[in-house]
Image (cartoon, rainbow, N blue to C red):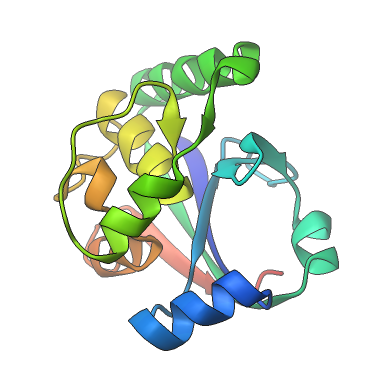
Length: 164
């Protein structure tokens, strides 16, 4: 078995605050790490595919955070790692899915936009496509808080509060 980490954060910037007040989202950003002792996290932000760190989150004003450590098989881990490597190796071809975020907040499904992602859409898609975790929602309708609801019931996950 291998371990992955899903990090959920709430930032203190204007957009995050607006999303929080209008939608009541506890967390508004999600990312994933493939390391046992996570130093690098992968996600999407307004600049596109992003490699993040806990220090970067601290510098950018994270108000609260939690993470889930999840055990998956070595085969699923390798598939997940391979999918994330594809993003890393071709990051200049990917961009942020602003329209997708708006539609997700409004809970309106829309067709997949090629090479455009928002954080929780990226995370849900790589978890599902690698068969590491079968997410119960469509990737483009997955919000960071959906991971909480799902992982609270997932038998191979455990939660750690305030990691940032």
